[in-house]
Length: 427
Image (tube, rainbow, N blue to C red; front, top):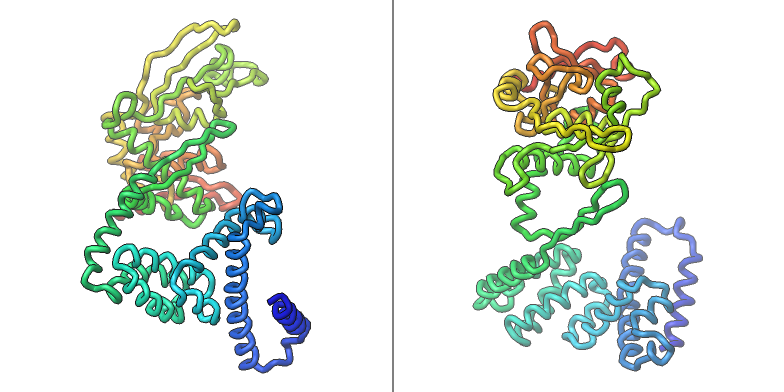
């Protein structure tokens, strides 16, 4: 075999050095088909060699802990890829001969063989060896028309073709088994990162995945032509909107049901400087907000969250002794929020279609700068545009008719003509 493979290697090397530019189109196609077929046939040889080396214990003889680890070093593979190679070699060795023959003939590729082998194993368990042998021919035939993904989908109903008398029962059993696996494997992990960020990882079962998509998908569309967020950022912001809505329902247990509760800890002079910026030394430091978890927020973030939240100002003296802890004070809620909803009907930013339940109440002239809590000093903004307004050069004011108008930055509109949201008016 070594001599034959060496000759094949020399032949392939000659093909690599040969120029393809001189070939006619039909010759190029024929050469491509042949090269692909040879690739699959060589894969069959490679798997046979891997299986034999694994059976001989070559890896342990040469000091490796397993065949996969030995292959990683020998062939410069990743460990997962090496493990898949060893597993597929074992499957082909113990499975129906028709699967090996299909790969050796070059009529299927390695990924299709992987799907065929897994499907055959399922058929064998459900309907026995005779049905499994029949399924090989059906699946190999399908492999000539469909890639591995399509083949896997078709394989879910293979029993309709090879064992129709038990197909429905087997499909029901498979569905129940999949549901059980999904219930077993479901999990969500929140991993703390630097700066108070969280990494979300996990696996959702089918029902929860459907619920999440149903909730997030309507909120992930771009909010307008100037929305520069990536799809991942839009999904992130949609999740934040969903959390805010859940807090507003009042139906969460114990500490849930209200918008964010922020404990802003700062020095007395810092707080005075924040509230009376025109009457204090401009060099006075303005402290960042500190949550009860110990994490810090920028003053800009605190100002944005304070628009639609319960605020507990904890004022500290020069020796960090608490001077006063203010009582909870709702800002724009109850009848005032209802009046705001009747006026704005949703996010007031131009072009946004977010409904009122997804919106925060934003102080046009911020409360920390002496702004009042009134209908004439408030506007509804969705989470995205609330952040955008706090961190951009857009400004908002109420026009003479009492409705909000937004002035774009000069780089976007040199004339800075005020804009309105006409979407909610049409509705």
